[in-house]
Structure formats: C-alpha cells, structure tokens
Length: 271
Image 1 (cartoon, rainbow, N blue to C red):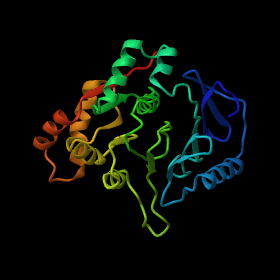
Image 2 (image 1 turned 90 degrees about the vertical axis):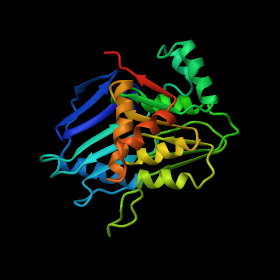
Image 3 (image 1 turned 30 degrees about the vertical axis):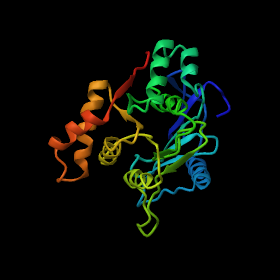
C-alpha cells in the first residue's frame, strides 16, 4: 500500500496476491494464509463500520485514507474470500489538473467548466477504470461557491472542496434485516435538503428514475454511468428507470431523458 505506483491490490486466494501498476497487473511474491486474510478483512471492515456474513456475502466499503474495499465471502467466491483494495490516489482535483496531465485539452476544459457554471445537467460515462469519479470530482470543483451541493453515493468516493456540501452514502441492513438505506432513498431525501445542485456518484438501477425527475424539475445535477459509448449511456438512462416498476413506461422515460440531460461526457482508456 505504501508503493506510490500501486493502484489496486487484490487477493484471489492467500497464495495469489496481485498488484496493478499503470493499468497492468502482476502476481506478487506475497504469500498469506487463510487466517491472515480473514483477520485482515475483519480489521478493515471494523474501520469502515460495515459487515460481511452469510446474509450479506458482499461488501463495498471506504477505508481511512479514501481507499475502497470490496470483499466477496468464501462460499460465493470458491474456496477463499476474495478481496480488492483500490487505492485512493488524487492525481487531479480540477479540470486544469486534467489539462496538465494531458487527459483533457484546454478547450475542452474551458467548455466543461462553462457548462457546470451555467448549470447544465452532465452525465459522465465510461468503462471500468476510465476515470469517471475523477472527472466527476473535477467537474464538481467548478460548481460556484454560492450553490448548495448534495451528493449521494453507494460508498464515499467524491472529494471536492465546496463551502456548502453535504455528502451521503448508502447503508446495509442490520442483522435483523432492517435499517437499509438505498441510493434511491438518498436521492429522494436530498430533495428535502434545499439543494441547488445534486450529484449521484453512479447510477445503476431504479434510482435513475428519481434522478431524472429531479433534473426535469429544474434542479441542476451530475452523475456517472457505466457505458462504453455516449450513445449507450443515453440508452441506459432510458432503460434503467423501467426497473422502478411496471407503472413506468418508455413513453414517459424517453422524452424525460431528452429534456433532462444536456451533456454526456464519455471517457476512454488508452491501452
């Protein structure tokens, strides 16, 4: 974890620990045992305030320092508990930082900043590891200081400086099966907090409907979405709301998407 070049570490089994650097991964010479892996997971989850057990065999959690943890319990993952730790590395905090890193042209940065200041609704799309959260952070940094920003995420990842920002994340249900807080719950609650900007960390399911309704009502917002092209992103924005229930129809969703989204920013990965 102390190696600045390491981006992510994962454990497939105690004797197979991998590390990713500069987009490429390799098997390390680290050899662990089952007990050590279990103790490591237990210690990390205690720090995050989340849990994993037979009723909840998957967990996504944020560790101190901003590192992201994902665990799949033994039994779902064959033979051994599978662990992923994605390191938090702040390479860019503003659009100008992306220009400096040659990830974005100066003209594109100026256009995006103007779009955010003007209150356009922006969807950031891309594949896994394309930098969607980094781009969303940089866009959020351009929000004027006089706005009130409410952000909702499954796990805290967004980090941007703003004088009036409330960040919320989802919560697992307790041992009794109650107390779960979903992303859809958070989107709805955020509307009661007098926002002038809404940010959804990643749209994956029925919460897309609530986001669209908020954007369509005139509340400026931004979100990310996993998609391999800008066109695919728009198609997913038209289909995800249908998961909210049988009473939601494409005849309603498609024109709502058309009137709610102003800009799709699609990110690619250099291989």
